[in-house]
Amino acid sequence: MSIKRIAISTGGGDAPGLNAVIRAIVLCSIHRGWKCYGIRDGYNGLLTPHEYPKGGLVRLNRDSVRGITHLGGTILGTTNRGNPLRFPTVDNDGHVYEKDRTDELVSKFKAQNLDALIAIGGDGSLIIAHVLYKKGVRVVGVPKTIDNDLDQTVITFGFDTAVHFATECLDRLHSTAEAHQRIIVVEVMGRYAGWIALNAGVAATADAILIPEIPYDINKVAEKVTQRDASGRNFSIVVVAEGARPKGGKHTVVGDKTAGQADRLGGIGQKISFDLEALTGKETRHVSLGHLLRGGTPTSFDRLLSLRFGAASVRALD
Ligand code: F6P
Image (cartoon, rainbow, N blue to C red; front, side, top):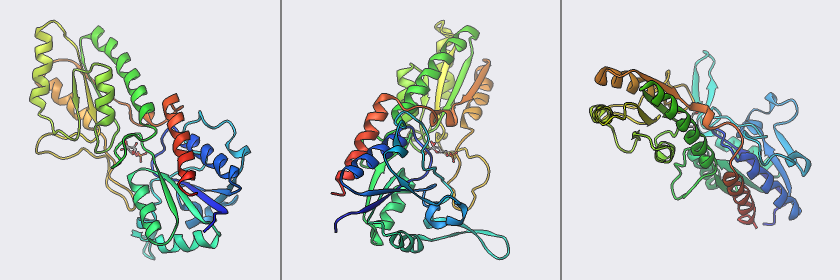
């Protein structure tokens, strides 16, 4: 079937490079004579159109994508509370439950005469995209996430920017840790993958790197700090991925799980810093880089990767 109209969706946590992907898709589509539309906030623009007085589906033309390659965030908006497979819905008693709205989404997509969807997202968004594909939508997925945790994917865009910034932060923390002869524990994002922690930690010469893939033994970390002290290196930098957990222990999460949302990881850096202070007797501080890793301008590597992904996703529809 020849294509006339395509839609783009950006879903889940944002990642630097999203706008560059959108720009490449729009320009390549225009070049083929296709009309391009953006769905606001994941799929909410189609599922809850009443929330968008200016329209949940927006026409994207050359002007819409001018000067956006270097911008963080996404011009379409995104959400990680709008999963159409588990859409948070309020019943008559005011309880929130999860509802599968994918059939409705497919109907609404087709009602707009859209011929194909380019879904830019991480694991959650690409699972949704796969379900839409199985329900008859022509779909191409573009792998996005700072976590770099997608199966069958060597590198996702957003990861390089996150690692670059985390490395810069670690370099800064290094000098203050040394000046005060402290331990500084730095928590980085990454969900259940240790890629950001490992790459930034090695690049910045951290003294211990704790990742979800290898549950840690806090006594070993404390031993390492004590050995360094004995050798005259009386400060230490410990990088910990938010999904790290002790041997036989659980992940550290923030708050209770809510309908339509995944567990919120976080807090392990603080726990480790308290544990290390107690075990080593050394003054310890902790910092969580959190969303700083997701914001801001993409590196040139991520811009180029994103532009290539965008162009390739359009070619995949040819
Ligand atoms: O998947 C990207 C990511 O930034 C993870 O590293 C992190 O666990 C999660 O999203 C945070 O999501 P939120 O923006 O909902 O806090």
